[in-house]
Length: 410
Ligand code: HEM
Image (cartoon, rainbow, N blue to C red; front, top):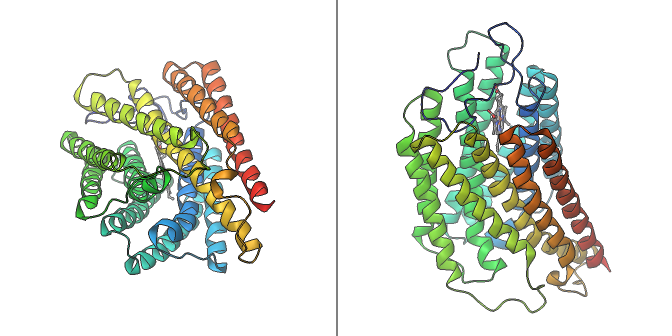
């Protein structure tokens, strides 16, 4: 039997069958894409392996560059990195093979790495001159990651021991919103306030108003996740989350009005920044669909479009767009360290290959709508074509990174 939330539904849609549970006949309930728990393995490969891994790695570049936090990689950081990757792989393998002991054990490695990087970053931020509003976003993001991880552990326990009081489906939806909004989106907001001015470039925003989006997003996310977990009305909290997005976009608008001259060597057009713009567009779409699901009478499959637009369209594409601008800097610094402090002959902007950046953008532009249409309409060939295009985009992105490293060395 499919469990249905008593409150307005956000994710997953009512048609979703939740992995690992049995239906009325006692046979295991299947996930939307096939095996009993494989959807959840894929979800965590993407949310933990790709999105969270990228955030943790990016902090080591963004820290010294934009947050005034020197984060030199030491042996402990290598251990944390290995622990994260082993843990993320172990969790995905555990979900894939339906072994929840493995999921629980592996998640401890993941959480240990997140807490380690969080403590290092927050120690540095307490001494840095970065606006407090930015530090508040980063601190809350790490706190939410730990909370979401604990909720994930409770869910794992529920799979291991039946008879525990809370509902698995309600808690899974609460956990998903806490992790995605509280961890990934909170971190994106905070980092964007430092990175957008460097990337465009514009004047750096400052002042206490930067904290407004953090406070609204925190209150909205905690209220939303708590209400989803216990089955209360979520409408007030959805409005607060929308207000957080509005406050973030208001800051972006303010920044756009304070443009500074751009670097001469930066390729024009700058396709990675276009990719970030596409991500923001999907952010609007996801927020609109979420509002429709909660306040309107949207068909249940809209929930799939909402989840994919939020996770892939907004969060994942934001990671790619920002990577496109951070990676040249990383390649440039790596080459300088290799040359014992001698800067590379080219500037970091000249390392970008505009054809590859455009290829990545086009593959995502075409692949994502196909994938979303395929999942929503249950059309396997559309899912396969969309996924193949996104795989192409991901490989092209990795290839672009290798090319930049090679160019910086020359
Ligand atoms: C490291 C600690 C984590 C653990 C132990 C964990 C565990 C779980 C478990 C057991 C489920 C529910 C499976 C079910 O019963 O249906 C789940 C669902 C989910 N998790 Fe996690 N998780 C963790 C971290 C994360 C993070 C960091 C994110 C996102 C950034 C995330 C995103 C999701 C999503 C989106 C779902 C919902 C799947 C669905 O219902 O469609 N998780 N997680």
